[in-house]
Amino acid sequence: MTQIASEPKSFRIARETGPGAGVETAARLAEDVAAAFGPRDESPFALAAHDASGGWIGGIKGVIHWRWLYVAQFFVAPDWRGKGVGRALLEEAETYAREKDGVGIYLDTFSPTAERFYRARGFGVAGRIENFPPGAARTFLSKGL
Image (cartoon, rainbow, N blue to C red; front, side, top):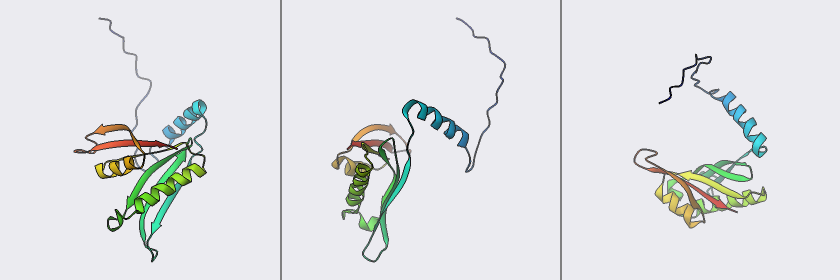
């Protein structure tokens, strides 16, 4: 068995917390990735659904980068579920992605009901992490445009 001699440490590890945590890491990674794959051309977006009186009933928040639309948050008020609001929001997200010359949409969910909803709209499972959150699974889905 070969033993590798330990070099003296010439570095230290510091924990960062709070709003500015990881800013330098994110900036350096973004530079490195852009050099290899081109700029992200990141553009945040949000969609909101309102009832007839103007009350908020659902929405999607996300970002478009590298011509892919990422749905970061998607929520429909419980009283409005099953009434076409989610379908209409997702269709509008797809329309928006196409207007931006998008090539696909991706998202993730913990909900088996939401997974069925996305699959019924043409999304396929791209990956899954079991027991995340504990007792459930995080499923990643995507759909090409």
